[in-house]
Length: 93
Ligand SMILES: [Zn+2]
Image (cartoon, rainbow, N blue to C red; front, top):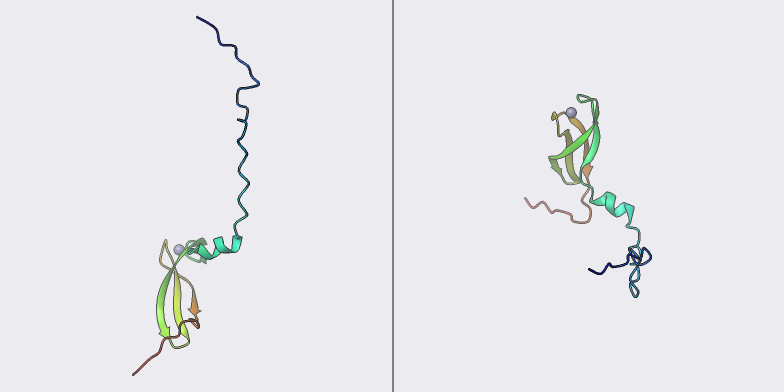
């Protein structure tokens, strides 16, 4: 049986003609933040920042009023008014 000489120079070396892929451009951190839907809000009951669930409270002409509730215990941790100015809703009596 012929012994195959082991050459460490060829082991693990880059193949000729293969160029490393250029690193992809850095993703916009703001875009990542925008896609993040879960909001961490401090819950006084859990005594820590917990993922908040958005709950629609009121639909106002100026915007929708949302309430944030703790996803663990259900305590209200905040509220916001989402002003939907780009897509106004017409109220026809
Ligand atoms: Zn809680």
